[in-house]
Image (cartoon, rainbow, N blue to C red; front, side, top):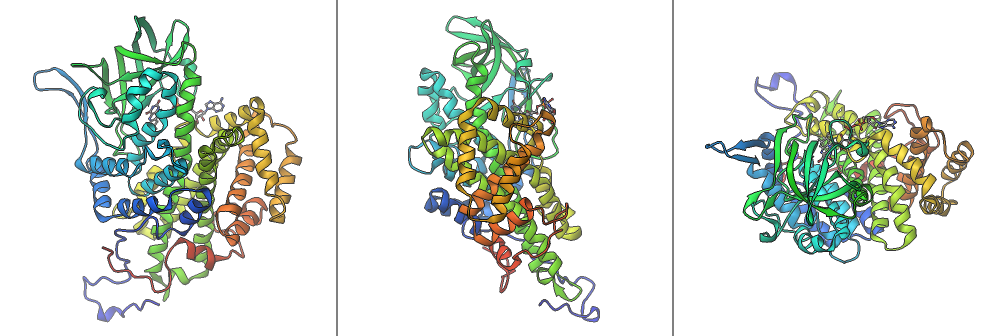
Amino acid sequence: MTTIPPASELGTHSVANQPAPRMARDLWQEDQPLRDAVAAAGGRAADLATTGVVLGSASMLQAAEDARRDPPRLHLFDRTGQRLDEVRFNAGYHQVMQTAAAQGYATCAWDGQPGGHVTHAAQVYMLSQVEPGCCCPLTMTYAAVPALAANPALERIWRPRLASGVYDPSIRPVEAKAGATLGMAMTEKQGGSDVRANTTRAEPDGEVYRLTGHKWFCSAPMSDGFLTLGYAPGGLTCFLVPRWLEGQRNAIRLQRLKVKLGNVANASSEIEYDGALAYPLGGEGQGVRTIIEMVHHTRLDTAMAPAGLMRAALAEAHWWVSGRSAFQRRLIDQPLMRTVLADLALDAEGALAVGMYVARAFDRDDEGARALARIGVALAKYLSNKRCVTVIGEAMEVLGGMGYVEETPMPMLYREAPLNGIWEGSGNVICLDILRTLARDPLAGAALAQVLDGARGQDRGFDAALEAHRARWPGLPEEAQARWFAESLALLLTAVALMEMSSGPVAQDYIRTRLGGERGILPGAVAGLQTDHILDRLGRREGASFDRDT
Ligand SMILES: Cc1cc2nc3c(=O)[nH]c(=O)nc-3n(C[C@H](O)[C@H](O)[C@H](O)COP(=O)(O)OP(=O)(O)OC[C@H]3O[C@@H](n4cnc5c(N)ncnc54)[C@H](O)[C@@H]3O)c2cc1C
């Protein structure tokens, strides 16, 4: 128990009962749930052990802070008035990008070794804890790789550079670079979810096309190229638009950078194509089918990132209450605080486990696994992002007033919390997608049913919840119930993932409180959680050192 000296012994500037800032950390070794999930899902533990040390190092934390403190700036023209259309970044941004790329963030899924997507997913989880803005450009680079298969000639040029692990921000045509990044520009002013409302035009020009139009959101505009959609004579088509051509800039005009709630290290821009040269990826009219390959993979990352954000917030909250006392007792020893933290930790463990469960399906090369990945990634993305906002808001409150102060990571995490839920299919859109997938893709429904049925017999609460779900929805629900239906299915899938990939007590408590309804509506409104066990998995408790780490 921390002893607070009487006021008479404190000078005016003495500091007591303030936990030291949490400095460098080992994002792998200190995270039991992550190690369990990666082992169960078949990820590359040895590589991730290195990544955990590198991404959690003091120099990486400093670089991440620098990248956010000094956000990207737009440089439209040079001194003479020539167009530049460049974005300049703080050195910290480049350091984070270079380090994460070298750890294999965008590449390990494509090197042909087992467990690549699980390993990638674990890297998303870890990098989200340190600098979430840098996830976006690396995620798009990872996810663009499978879409390139639609044009083998382009794939030959781009794939080795995307999958090189080399971060090369220099301004040159891709052929002259050892490493490259790709972005994605789909969203237009009149519609983001509804890409068929695009107005960008693509005029054939020999083997290539010329694009004219405006994209309302284009993150990472310093990428070497962008996958984009435009209307060719044969319908909505996917294109690769390189940023640099031999000897000149492509006609992609940056208009302005968005001023955003968070994700500030990542530049998000508005762009105009002014007759920009574009290579077709797939045939005319096949645009959605082609880009969906990319979206499928970015969705995996938007399902994993909230797990990382929740982990970061809860690890910070746990650290804080382990070093802070109120009413003569350490906060971590107070029963109500323990219940609140343990309840929040169940959501974080659930998000991690279901993300890893789905990532493993990405790694498997059979029809059933691919079908499970199609439906599972949407369920995981929906539930985990919805929990993320609540969990981080509550974790902020655990730090009391200091949770609202920018010197702690909580405000940054709070600003990040809603973002992964918005992009790659916002809440309603993802729930309607789940209904569509189940209606049109019988393999996906069958794969999900097999997984749910296969988990029967381990936990009576789970069995009852599955039966109740099927009794309530013998078929697909009407559209207005899509959220309720998706939530119910996502909770069931998360429970399956926890039963396999986490500990027994975590899975039991998750099922009892999330599927069995033994709780109120708000976080912490539960009884009988196995708090010692859950909190031991969250972080160090007894004998924790609050000295600055190395
Ligand atoms: C920081 C940031 C970076 C981004 N970067 C990129 C990028 O690099 N490239 C890119 O292409 N885009 C990018 N986006 C855009 C993002 O992907 C879109 O904003 C998102 O897809 C939603 O599209 P929208 O904004 O047009 O919303 P809308 O499509 O107008 O949707 C608005 C709301 O209506 C709901 N809705 C839509 N249809 C239905 C329906 N049928 N029934 C019920 N509800 C419905 C949606 O769920 C949403 O909540 C970025 C966005 C942000 C915030």
